[in-house]
Amino acid sequence: MKIAVIYLTKTGHSRKIANAIAGELNIHAEDISMNPGIADVDILYIVGGIYGGKSDPIMIEYIKGIDSTMVKKAVLLTSCVSKKFKQDEVREILRRKNIEVSSEEFVCQGGLGFIGRKHPNSSDLENAIAFVKGGQTP
Image (cartoon, rainbow, N blue to C red; front, side):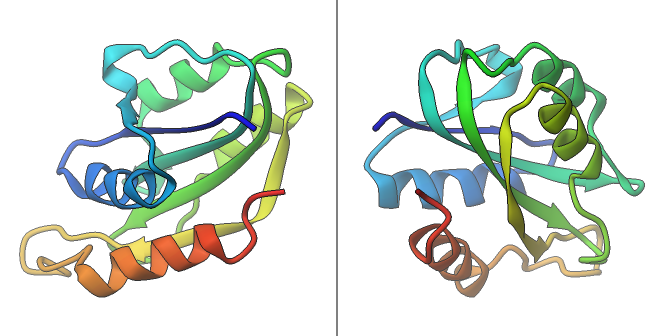
């Protein structure tokens, strides 16, 4: 089974989450800004932040380039200051491309200024790992 972890980050939060889960899976997390190639992936973990209630446009454009011949299943992990928003647009794009998307999405608090400035912390990273180990693989 081929597993991949990709992420996009502005603040470093998504990179921390991606590296934590990739380390647990004994693989390397790939930065979307480097345009990593995706092929024959059984499970793709997509880690991204929410900015102004939405996913980053760079993330959206990258996801638009993925199709069901490249990825069988996607699992979303999200960093959001308010913890109120998810990667809904990413989820919808993947579904339209007939890529199975896990119904569960990990959302942890990100930081912005003084709000959540110590997040994601070690507890958040442990929770992300537990989410991945807890069944977000087939």
